[in-house]
Amino acid sequence: MKEVGSSRRADATPHAAALIEGLRDIGYSLETAISDIIDNSITAGAREIRIITETYADEPYLAIVDDGDGMSEDALIAAMRPGSRNPLATRDEPDLGRFGLGLKSASFSQCRRLTVVSRKVDKTSAAVWDLDEVAERNEWAVQLPDDTAAIPEVSQLGAAGTLVLWQKLDRLTGGFSHNAAKRAEIINQRIAETERHLRLVFHRFMEDAKPLRILLNGRLLRPLDPFVRKNQATIPDPEEKLALSHGVVEIQSFTLPHHRQMSKTDWEDVAGPEGHLKSQGFYLYRGRRLIIYGTWFGLCRQSELTKLSRVRIDIPNSMDADWKIDVKKSSAQLPPVVRDRLRRVIERIQDGSKRTYRKRGQKLVDHERLPMWHRIQADGQIRYRPNIEHPAFAEFAETLPKDLQRGFFNCIALVGASLPVETLHADMAATAEQIVPDRVDEDTLNQAVQATLSALLGAQKDIKEIMSLMKDVDPFRSAWDDTQRIIAATIEAREAK
Image (cartoon, rainbow, N blue to C red; front, side, top):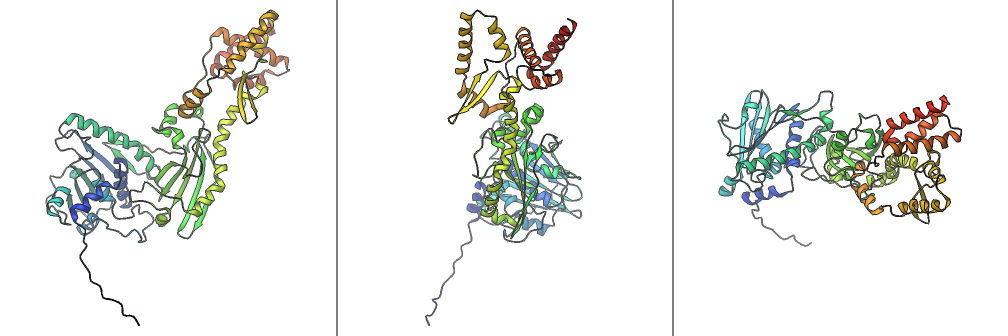
């Protein structure tokens, strides 16, 4: 039998200064860093979280104060230890943490001095990580101040709760450390950009029967539901459940209302700064907290026709390893079994959004409605051509001498052939909701209404059906009040004869 050789051991404890500086560059943004701190507050049972900023002071700071359970000194020291929890350990269902790194790595990504003050059963404990001191001493040791009275915003703590204080905000100043006004402007702008992220990521907690309250400098944030479920025009599909070895995945798709069925403010709020095109796709929640959104995970391409499709996916924290949830809780990967399920339902998920736009598009080419344009699909191509049989064109052509009628229809054909397809495509892909029909003057509208009304009455349509047909096509739809007035006056004049 071969004897196993002996081995030696050597101390490989990481250098404190090097490792703790490395924690700063995991990839947090300000919004993901603040969200990570809020995760801890929610896990601690907080019902109110206040974010307080002081940007004009010589030493600006950001504080996050909650009314959660608080921590004893031993628990606080453990929480300040990098890697305080094993990511493989089983967590309680409401626990939003994973690696035990969030408090430290999120904070260090934005500041060089982290102070945590926690109160439990009226006993207050405090601990401080100062990266400049760690660099000097190269020791894994936190400061434990005995007197907390001078710590900014400590007075905001109630009988129980925790204060997380960021000072030495070297990552937030934009390089303007010696220009107080410009520094404050940069920090305030970053905070303002973070607001929408918080409203979206924690919207389900903020919508609870006993809602979580998040206040930014005293102002209560309102939840931002990406599925617009309170709008009656939103179309929800039935919820599906996929039972796997480490938990149950819940999937539900939604088709958002067309922009004409929402206020402009709500439409833009739900779209976000990148617009609806970039916001379509899957919305992955872990423990009801939004992890990642606006992606199809490579299952299909983002397109204008599918921009109203959004899919809620809920997973428990027991599936973190399966989904490869990262430290920042801002990225994930689809497990193969879930990917296969979503491949089978993706067409149905998209169809709702396609129907919403195609339903409106169909009205453009429905010959019953006497459209101004025909949609012609042949040989793998789609063309739009002015409808020269439209009553407004045909009636006017009848008033022309025969030698001018050909020139008139040639002009109409030129309009169709010069349709700016590339420009329309670019505008539709970027901001379809901003594209509106051109307005027509009273005389032009009157002529179009008179001609269309005569044609439809001649086709034995009753007035109720005529109104329904005309209301859904332009130029009548965009000037419907005036159109109704002209129709009423025309009918009255006909009946008076």
